[in-house]
Length: 385
Image (cartoon, rainbow, N blue to C red):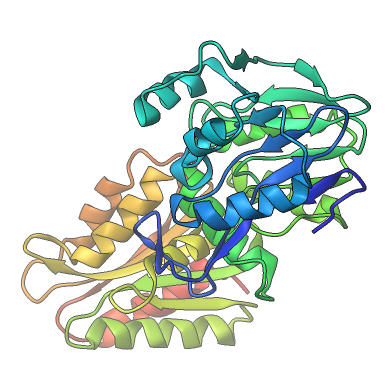
């Protein structure tokens, strides 16, 4: 697949995978992207997952059309992109590998080899000329590994963005970009918002006409849309107006309270209400929605003097990813010693810029007049009319 006259795609689609990184469901598979720049010197950008070695090597051979590659540029050492470095270097003994110093240390760890006699170590704003194509390397530490760099082709105005601007899903499946890119970003990169902001600041100084990520489609139009979403996600700002209600329920009474709250919010004109049963729905989707919307309601039972395990797991996912800048309301249920709200606030205590509603709904076994009145008050605070 041609991207520009001199740049082509040589990656692969993976429809065999069920869990990406051993935890994220990927019903539409994954793409492992790799690219080739053909010039006086020829450069390959990144390899692919180990399970697709033969297919990738065939794609590379066909794209080279009899030539030998001069460089392998390694932007990211995560194995879904780096697994075939040693295969490539053995197949093309005249090639030189280009990467950061940290990446070469990782090559030693992964492959027992750091190619001391066949390497170029690059740092911030290092350059490499292929002929008419001049490449500039921009370091991107902790987006989302420490060795990461991105590559800018000054000639065709292409940013090879490593894992930034990536998404779940193979390239031969049509689907909305934002949904799976958001879930990918929040789940995998979300902790590193400060570092993503630093990279975006560097990228703002470049004339970018095409973005080539290591996962997901090549982006060629309306780049402001994608960059703006990354600005929102990495600064932890609110993307969409609405309320996300995350709950667990043992015997249905907490679920009943959540249903009533959703009805009350709808009556008050809330434009979007997302209700998530944490025990039954995809956890990554739930975390994604918590970051998407500005207002969150947590509803759960007191359980072993703590909170229900799925709620605890959910909150840990939020705090691990620097959850912040949100309004949170709580519903707790307990038949003899309801303390879930206290436990949840303790788990969230290190989150910055969190506003808690004055009202906490406390249910003792089942809803009664008092807790129903509290639901009315909570709805009014979460979505003032």
